[in-house]
Length: 110
Length: 110
DNA sequence: CAGTATCCGGTTTGATACTG
DNA sequence: CAGTATCAAACCGGATACTG
Image (cartoon, rainbow over all chains, first blue to last red; front, side, top):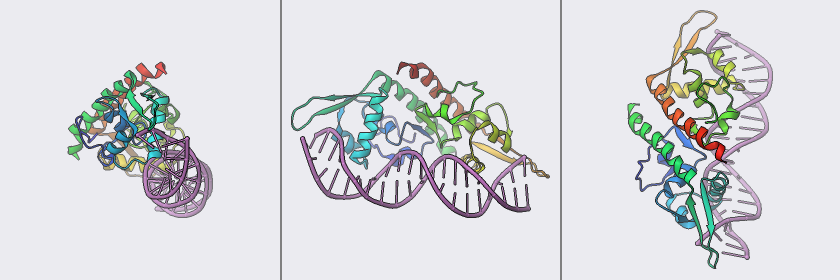
């Protein structure tokens, strides 16, 4: 991945330069966003520049189905929902790191 | 990856069960096919069940452009072309292996 | 806030037939 | 053998407006 592990920028254009993809277009980025703890829908959306709510919902649902993260509805109005990585999801970050390392080491070669 | 490292089956349906993708749909499989040495176009096509020649050509060209493999035309008639991994391409296999290991360790969890 | 509901466009992938 | 050419379909991914 072209994205450094401590990146502040969660932009798919950076991710695109990597030949490795985790899941669909946004899943890898969501993984990174949740790396530092749980976040709410709107927080994720703000950080993931350019995701439409529809696509973010789809991504989140798929990741939940695959047990990469959990969705916790705290109820109330306005609603309050939190997404957090599971241990399985967190373990994927190691794979991502491997890909990251590869990209950093070899992408400049071209 | 659902595909064991020494898999004989290069079927995209297996690859699909993996959350990690290298390049486009077939690139990862091509990498695996060339793991044990150079191969000709038809050999690759036979092993990669279901690739159309058009798509295989596109995949191969893209991988050549990215220096993942080399294309060597030995001339003659009938033609004789060989595809072989570069060092860069081979290094990607390590990344693939990491993904493979992850899949084997965690896919059963679901 | 946390989503749905619609509609839509582009890229990707594929089937098939043909050629030097 | 190693591809092209052509035509289609499927599959994302996205814009936008609306709601409990």
